[in-house]
Image 1 (cartoon, rainbow, N blue to C red):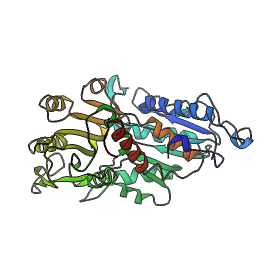
Image 2: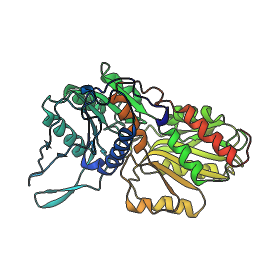
Image 3: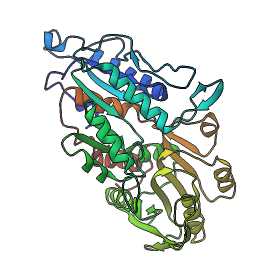
Image 4: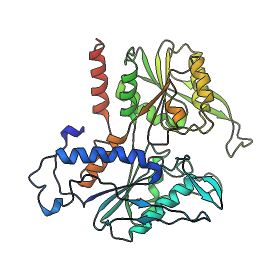
Length: 395
């Protein structure tokens, strides 16, 4: 469903309030602008009724602060009334650019710090809001979602903490393992795909692609991303291939069994353009190794697509890969912090998710179904068909 198809069918759950924490301030401003514009232009005979009080505003952002004491401790404060509001929190737990003073020293905020700040501001609400929703694009501790040995289940504990504090809906994007929602079975949990935004951005910056089974292919870099690759390959009607990792289970390095080799399963890739899709780029080693293996198989162009570009070990290895011709584009979303260095790279493409988030918020505020938004088949198909028509290709 695109915005132009949306009509008012129900009254809002409550006056809309947007609380982007400092880690998500820039994205929150973009979402706010979309909501202000849409609701100003939207026409309805019911907008003058009491049920729509506060429906049209110049700003939906609620002023919330998380000041810190000299010891590093903090508190959450809300500077305006939120009584009866339908609140949407936004937090980017991966934003390492923020700092605070700790006993006179500069300390960078970690995911733990961001999650605690989220809980502090939720606690400041004191039960006065109509409903509390949390939009956490990168799900806190999502990589620690399954217990394999004697380990902590951090992600499940975090979700239960939020639910116990009164959060009714949790929205995340491309969760590492969506089964973690089993920890809160009686509350809303949605994992939102980024597939459409990747295809839209890629087709905008590349003008010589042929999206068909003879010239295009989707690659999963490991077993964990196979479902994402299968979905996108089916929507685009192209082949899919995958790599699986052979590991040395006799030892661990940094808490993980080291990868011995990547083995490919799939049809021939020679001469094709490929998308390597994953939920996150952490160090980037896996994606770059897969790209090198694909280049050795005479792949034409390689595009790395990942919802979260963390780049925990810097950009040098990506610069080198681009200079060697191993990769052509790197596409990630603005759901996670993007450094100025990343944005300046010639191979980097940023996929803006603000309009998508605003549409989710607007729909949920009216208590309408978001199922069509969670399955963007129609939008991807329309986008690809328009591209083919513009370039004189058969649809």
